[in-house]
Image (tube, rainbow, N blue to C red; front, side, top):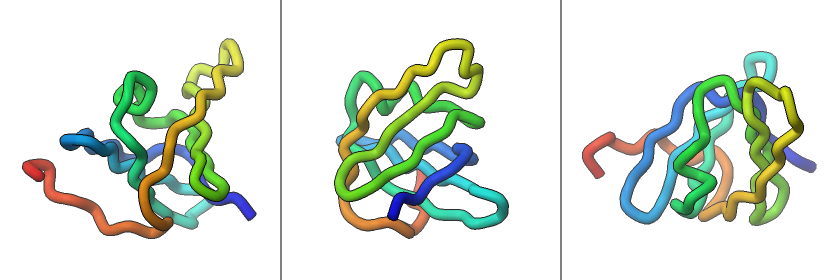
Length: 84
């Protein structure tokens, strides 16, 4: 089973990136490791995950760009404060 959807919020923190998604009203969020790919995730991109890997495709979809992000923890994480 995989989860994810269109990105509705991204918060970059020290060492991790919070990504919230929506798939037809089903919202779910994850943390991924902060790296050169994860800091480029933007609103309306698509992120989905299975196991400890998450996959990212840009919103423009002009070219299918699917990059692997490394998930930290479980699905359904709480929104962090932006100052953390």
